[in-house]
Length: 334
Ligand SMILES: Nc1ncnc2c1ncn2[C@@H]1O[C@H](COP(=O)(O)OP(=O)(O)OP(=O)(O)O)[C@@H](O)[C@H]1O
Ligand SMILES: C=C(C)CCOP(=O)(O)O
Image (cartoon, rainbow, N blue to C red; front, side, top):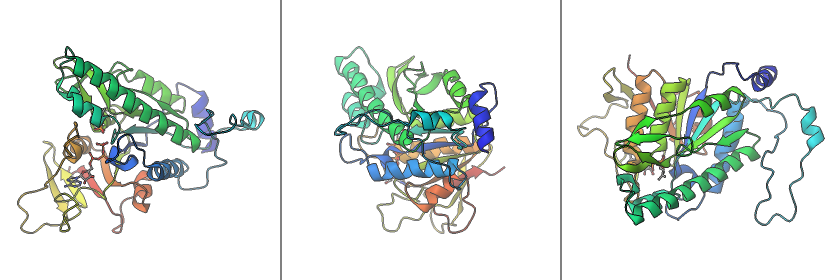
């Protein structure tokens, strides 16, 4: 496997089927109630588990730290073992993953205060809000890329707005994925994020990470897609309700409509009840279920589970078949 990884890194034309597209949910990696606050423990755990999944559960060799910048408070410049690294054959990681993260307590606040999801760039408030939202989400992107790089994952940040992505009435209209493809070919892990973008009809809007994932799934046909968030999966009602039941399996038919397969909910005629935080500009769990259903319709299984648990590691390994796995599987009924 190490040889294969090394060969893929040097041959830009080699085809690299994507194993997994993973969403690091904003609710999972930030403290949603506290403005621009990262949940460092969850972020570290997600990055460590991604590395483990890229090593196929085995011990990947030595971690090659790739964050060579000085952090606030560091007394000296980082030490880089240039000789040791130049003698290494390859990273020994099966790194054909794409990471997309949400905004959580970064970006949503600026977006909802200025109303940029509804467009109207002629207004000074919206223009300022667009700038403020992008400052906030790109600073989170930088922190996530650094956290992955510290785990030795060759991650490169890519902003949809800066890559020229735009929408029409909030649906993706123009997408240049060439940078993503080329980066995958040479062994990088692209790290995209929900972003403020230009919209052909509204002037501007917010593009959710969940929508980006659906589009990438269409384009890259991954083996599976994982959504990591702050709850165990989709419940029949907001999980703050003590009677909420975790939905283990949702099936999506060829028309895109979905139904609960497991567990059988007796007397539940309402389907799934969802609550969305007031400052959330992209629809929260509701958007996630819709996008996950669209991905499942493509024949790609989707796993939604809680970050930093044994279940998230199993999902990242594509191993959710046993009864004791805690999460929601969304798959095609066909
Ligand atoms: N029926 C439901 N099932 C599961 N979660 C629900 C439900 N209704 C509301 N929620 C809430 O949805 C939240 C997760 O969705 P959210 O979109 O915030 O996740 P995320 O993708 O991690 O964050 P972000 O959108 O910021 O990237 C949970 O905190 C949960 O409380
Ligand atoms: C800039 C913002 C608010 C991006 C939102 O992305 P999401 O959290 O994935 O829905």
